[in-house]
Image (tube, rainbow, N blue to C red; front, side, top):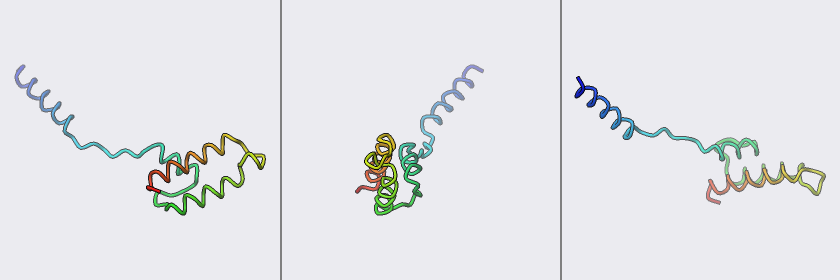
Length: 85
């Protein structure tokens, strides 16, 4: 009986180690898309246009928040890096 349990435990361990890993989405990329209001198939031009549009309203020189500006800039950088631009 112990041999059977050991064999089952070994098979479970092998399966757990070798099973295909689920593709996980990058939370950083998802958050960046949410901030800029973009879909997953957005192009480099879409990212830049969304960045300009949002930045026009929240830039510190126009009475906006420096923190929001930083978040928008970071989101742009993440997506452009992901797109290879």
